[in-house]
Image (cartoon, rainbow, N blue to C red; front, side, top):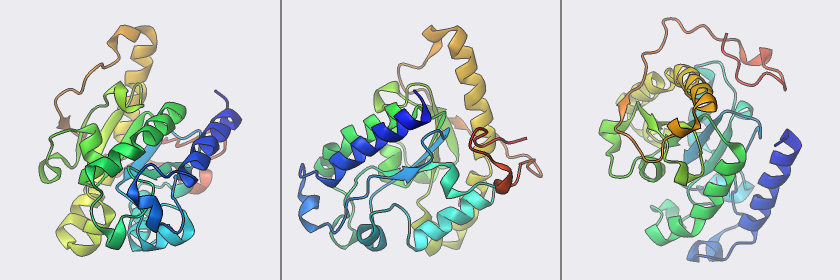
Length: 242
């Protein structure tokens, strides 16, 4: 699939999201928030749901939590434009309450189709509701910073998932902020591992995961990480690390 075809497919999904009335959240929304980013990216960030600012602008992570996400990305030399950012629910829950199971289920097919189009090597979950889709039964206090293969049924056919705290939690708790930067520092190495894994699977498609495997510790970040500055990225060389 070409970049243009991916972009068109993502926009078609976004148009459906903007017109969606499948759950109660549509009745209170100002704007739906389908997601945004580079259609050719290898890394997708999945949050929980839009907040006040996101509902007004129709874009994910544009409030204070978005500022924190930008800092986390910047800590590894990346920009938000280099990745794709979306949520498990596409409309704001009232008063920023937790999304209900039926609301998550109503949006599930949109996220599945987005992942099918993007075919990421790495999925980074932000918060426990996002993590629950990719690591069922895990507790975020124990699972953050860990990596496991993604179940292809989620839409990501051959990817690794890294669990992280939601950036809003990092804003509230200094200890979680510190842990979030430590977890973010592992993302480039997770991407390298995911690339190698996909290369192996290209030769042995029978090795692609068919079920979620036990979590493993994320690789230790390099010290210091050797990364190209964000400005050095080009349209044809996405997320080049070295």
